[in-house]
Length: 293
Picture (cartoon, rainbow, N blue to C red):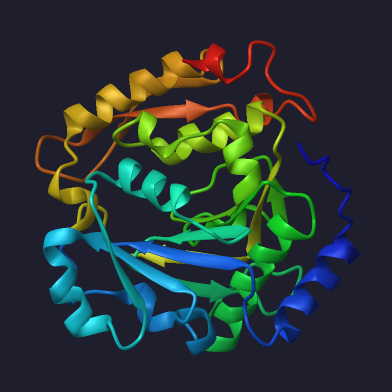
């Protein structure tokens, strides 16, 4: 297991400058899982050409020809033999041959804080997106973070610093591939909420994460056609919440929150997670990963 390096604010700024100066991505694969959204690829439209060249659009085998006809000239379209976002992400990690892997949801747009210390956001240019992805890569390959992410646009103004450590990540994930594999984390243990399971597992195994608040992502309406909406239900969400709470006892609390997603009422079963409590620096959990099952 790699030890975590101490990263000062000035060091982060230097990393950001390196990211902006980088000519092309190296040692990284960008995975964009997609399903039944051939005509709706917001994320791909934001990617600069250099990053598109290291991007793999991961699609169901029976949709490969449709995706290749529309997007094959821009990115590599890869058929996945498995179904379900957790299984698909794990298949991608098992088949990544670079040092870093980045996962992006297929329906994202990106923003950036141009003035440090403020919380106002501007729409990302292609250069901004390149700098954002290179920053994530630098964090997991150069600066000792096993996993890293980007803040959600909604709530981005709650953190005025450039980043936050040991916290929630979703929809944008970067991993040091060796750290991911050594931690014992797997995306395929839960049908949904598998990203929370992975983050908690890596934190508990001593792999710190960092989330950028210089950048932010936004997306369309939750539950939009395609993607996980083709199989995700309230019952599946509920079952995964309770399973997550069992796996990470003492760190996850099942709760009920208001929701306008779906058509079965205005409440959903959700989770509250003690992210900071989960991190165990520079050591594995006492019983190893098998103790989490």
